[in-house]
Each structure stands twice: as structure tokens, then as C-alpha cells.
Amino acid sequence: ITGEGIPDLLSVIVKYSTTLPNISKRIKVKENVFRCTVMEVKMIEGHGTTIDCMLVDGKIKKDDQIVLLGFEGPI
Image (tube, rainbow, N blue to C red; front, side, top):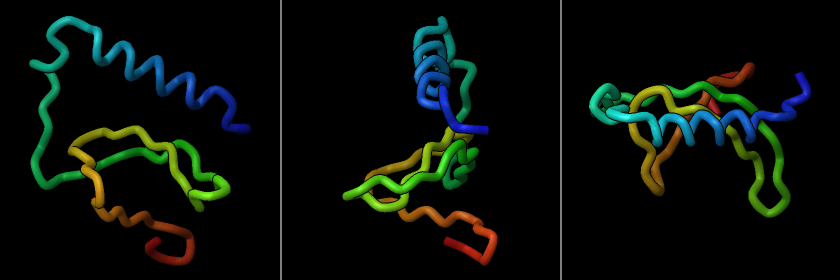
């Protein structure tokens, strides 16, 4: 509810997903498909609106444009 602990949760998930044996053989990435779950949206001074998300499938590269569904339409 408050968003506390989300960065800790994300770091634990990343740690275990990169250290488990043979995890890279079990994970399959689909090309041209991107899915993620938004965990938190916040304003950071100097950066603007930022999101913390968990990538479910696909890849994000520098300069990729991401469209999110908001209450009043696409963002």
C-alpha cells in the first residue's frame, strides 16, 4: 500500500534470478513482445515521472518508447 520495500523486493528477485543454476536455459524471451508489471509510479525531481516495473517478457533498450495505459488514455 505504501510502496515501502518495493526496491528491496526487486533487488532480491534480480539477485536470485541471476544466481540460480541453469536459469538462463529455462527463461525464453520472445522477440518483438514486451510485457511488464508496473510496481510504482513516482515523481523524481530532475527526472520527471518515473516507474518501477518488473519485466515479464521481452527486452528494453536505450531510447525505446514505452506506452502505458492510464485512467484517461495512453501515456
